[in-house]
Image (cartoon, rainbow, N blue to C red; front, side, top):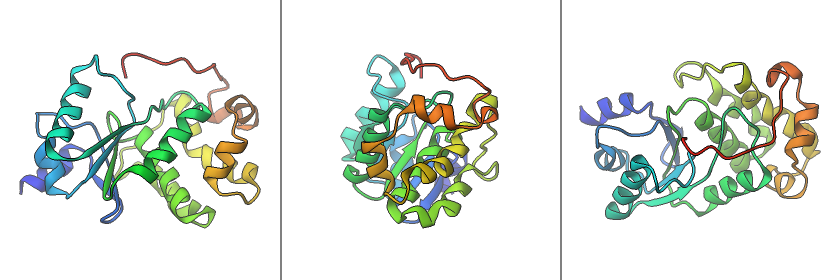
Length: 202
């Protein structure tokens, strides 16, 4: 009963059952039972490395206490990621013990993007259609604002640009956010692209 309630509270869903899952930020000081209830061995935090914030200190301390790996990978749903940010996320996919959890604040936008990336990274471009389902409004609550529409548009364009190369290879060799922004349809980014600057409140 408690597992079911926590999973609903934290917008929890399996991406690949028993291997990778997604959720929101935990709250109510229930991270430990949530992790144990789902057998999770690692957390990939998409909000970045923020030891000055209580939520990060709590999450990191609980993971250390419970023997759960904690990896940080910074994403921002309103701005295209830098190449280094995508590389860090792809590396986290490889380093994290399984099953692992992808989480951001609400488990809706950045988490949908990372979950879709994971499926293509895991299974290749043939998984693109399946990966794009990670952006559904239900059950994931992904309701993108105008400047978040690039999230769903990213992988189809990446596939074209990769020209058959695996996602990770294309990211490491060729991905450039400025070039990518020029090729995105204007409506997917509200017609605006700004150079990426880290926010300190995510």
